[in-house]
Image (cartoon, rainbow, N blue to C red; front, side, top):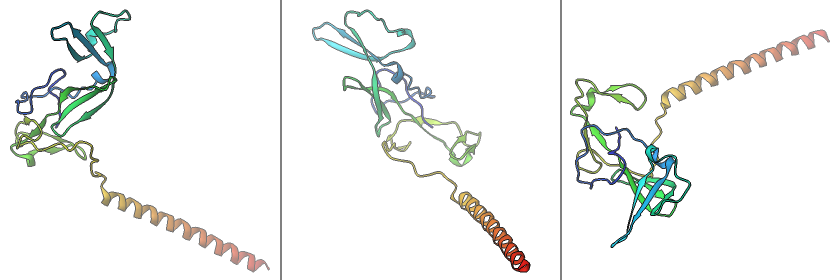
Length: 185
């Protein structure tokens, strides 16, 4: 199970996530970011995702405020979702959380790779990646196929047998036509 701690500055890797994470929302990547520069000393610029409250983006320049777009995002092995800005900077916008259960065998399967909690599975226990109890995130890897090979091979055999039956029908009709032609002569 994955969720995020939310947009904005993220806690450090040892921080405790909330008891129930927010839904994974990457809509900030669509709206872009707002950079606000505060005169110093020292001069500091803060980058925040543009929210619905910031929309529409002002067409007239506002002193100390610029807007930009996110061009991509990455997820690191700690589960931090980092947005890459059009100026090349990287900004953390969320943190994936993971869940464990006191009895994983008590989960109910509802799809090929989805499960629901039950009374026997216990409530989810949320935590961060690499914290020693919740596993790890392997960013940039492809997941192994979740295709049911037995079912696919069975379907292939059924299709092959149908093809064989059709080809035997054609062969038989060719033989009958050949016999008719030879009888006429």
